[in-house]
Length: 232
Image 1 (cartoon, helix red, strand yellow):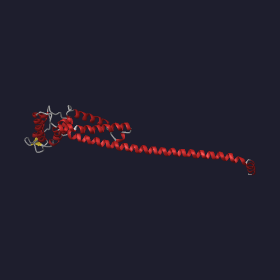
Image 2 (cartoon, rainbow, N blue to C red; image 1 turned 90 degrees about the horizontal axis):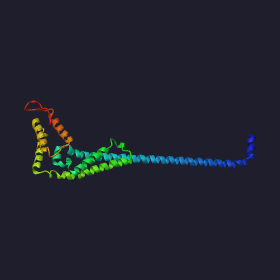
Image 3 (cartoon, rainbow, N blue to C red; image 1 turned 135 degrees about the vertical axis):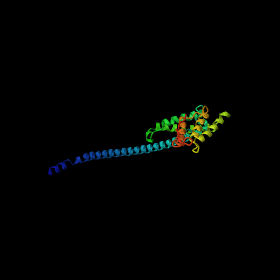
Image 4 (tube, helix red, strand yellow; image 1 turned 90 degrees about the vertical axis):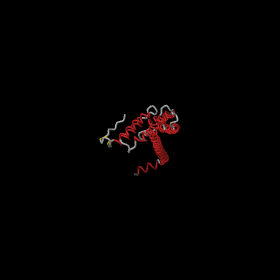
């Protein structure tokens, strides 16, 4: 140990440059550590901001899908109800510009609708779907003009045919009527509507399914046999 003490005694002045170098290293390390910490904090903040932004986007998508469903439901009240279509025939009339605009907006919104909210992951995609849903809502409200027109574009005889078809459809849906009466009433109603209103396929399918479902298990009291449900 004595030689070491002799060396330190002779070269004690080395303490100052060595101490300065050590201090510089310590300050550099401390500064680098602070920089790393700052970057970690900024990264964490950025991740939190992205998470909050993504959560807000998903909430908006859910809200837009609910608005989309609401308009679809309102539309189905016409598309699946022949009575409503008779009362408001222009709602499915492709010769009516307001109706055409609505059907076009519906097609666009349905085409952009995601299967699940998380499928919309970019601002551009969200903006596109948002615009489509808002246009769909607006088009349906504007098409209300067509609803209010009702049968005003039909002649007197044509309005009488519409009224007759409405009464016949009530019989077709009346569970108190016999199966034969109901099927006959349905066929006559379709004949009255022919050339006046083009019923959407979904409307026809819903009506025939409803009537067929109620007739399927019943027997014709006149024949006391099972009645085949056929619509032509």
